[in-house]
Image 1 (cartoon, rainbow, N blue to C red):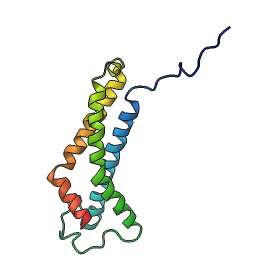
Image 2 (cartoon, helix red, strand yellow; image 1 turned 90 degrees about the horizontal axis):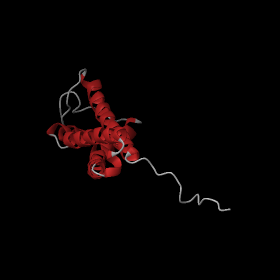
Image 3 (spheres, rainbow, N blue to C red; image 1 turned 90 degrees about the vertical axis):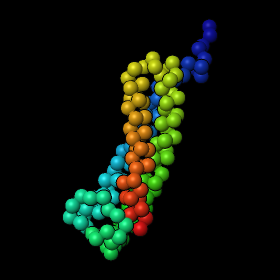
Image 4 (cartoon, rainbow, N blue to C red; image 1 turned 180 degrees about the vertical axis):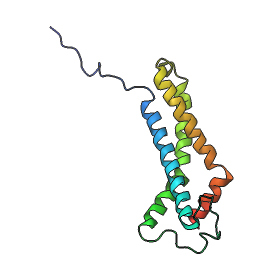
Length: 140
């Protein structure tokens, strides 16, 4: 009587699930960080706008006092670094989308495709002049 070798029959991880979740997390973090930065500027101006270095509403204000300084640091890191991570995951995802194993599961394939498109949009937004203006304002 033989027993099955349980080490060889371990279930395989679903293809692309972790990558898609990571991309959705990166996109969400970027969107929230940009929203918080714009909201903080709107708190000083009274309306939603794209803040610039030295503008009338925030030019002389102490935008990040006390606990806000921690939020400022998180915003700078997220807005500055998350698009780079999103670009890396998008490159990996494009290669993963082309694999036969991934194409067999249409639900996961579509999920990874959507998350990859969103990650690419984050990279495109990060490269825009508006994002540069916002990031420069944060660093001021």
